[in-house]
Length: 447
Ligand SMILES: Nc1nc2c(ncn2[C@@H]2O[C@H](COP(=O)(O)OP(=O)(O)OP(=O)(O)O)[C@@H](O)[C@H]2O)c(=O)[nH]1
Ligand SMILES: [Mg+2]
Image 1 (cartoon, rainbow, N blue to C red):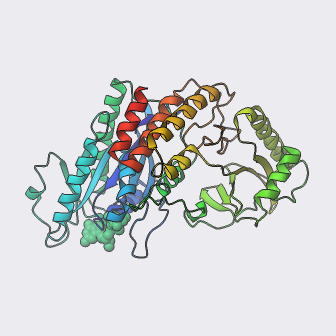
Image 2: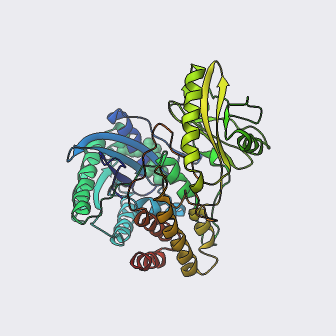
Image 3: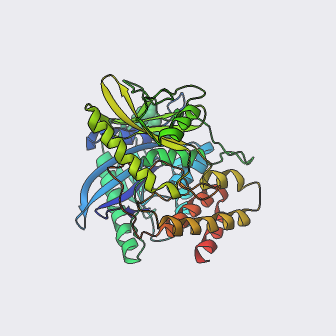
């Protein structure tokens, strides 16, 4: 759902590309990336046949809304029926939908059925309506059906040939306009909130999708290795290990112990998450992260940066999980800062794994109580900690994620953490339990 960033100077909207399998959603996003000339498409995984398994992700910053920069998150869903739960979760965060339909004779029935399903889903969304534009694709094929057959659904229709990039920008621009209409309504209703953006929004989404059960047997898919995310190895920097020189890890003793545990089953390889941002996941369940700008040529500058990080971490110690450290690693004549943290069960994972098995009402109540306590307690931390169901420990409500870089931490704001956590709870419940979860979350929001 649309939000303002933490500083309130950018508007973040999400445009979701929906449509039946093989209709051309991924092709559309590829063409859009090229035309917008902005970044590249991030696609976590595809099947051998090129089918999308999770989503495609593209970010674009352009245009202004009431003086604020518009930051578009552009996401395509996997069209295949077996991934419907992932598709629904993605749709539940849309501010507008570009529906890519295969409009040739052989595809039109599936397109119509899929569109009906989309509209049924959107009808369950709370808040202002989510607009849909039909991007009538494959208009180059000789058996493309007449446009008249597509009109009359109360939808804007824009013709496209995604494989040639035609009509792509037009459909996108229309989608953004629809999203901004919705933003205006959200604002009027007092529902446009400031939410600090996750460091890696696409990664967060991927984690959420991995938590969505695909089959009816209650099996929740949580592959251990987050390292399946994108294949991005190049000139990888070294990650810290227990051999690190003294003075290069903080806290000094427990930090080294942490590094020992983190690399006990092997030192993982780093992969580039975004330009100059590196991550690695060790087999013993620790995450290593180094932010853009985390490399230094001058050792004194590097040490000063480590010391700044140490101060931030020390001042947050009361709110954070203890198994973590920050460290400096020399590699190829440069020094790189790393943050290392042990993966702990989060409220999100805990709920997603248990909702089907036990009394959902009791679990959600328990989670809601924890969230309330966290919202209150974290408000007292000196620096803003990203507060989401995926950053809160299911065990004790401590912060279990990566601390924002020392250079970008902000003093704690009086944001409504409680409302945000409830909103996420609702999204999770919708994904896991469908309508039942929805009702549950609504009663929760009231109580
Ligand atoms: N002729 C024609 N082919 C197209 C067009 N757009 C996409 N295709 C082809 O359709 C096939 C499927 O395209 P994708 O973009 O992967 O489809 P998708 O909607 O992402 O499919 P899923 O990921 O399974 O949901 C590819 O072979 C594309 O080249 C078009 O406008 N005209
Ligand atoms: Mg695709």
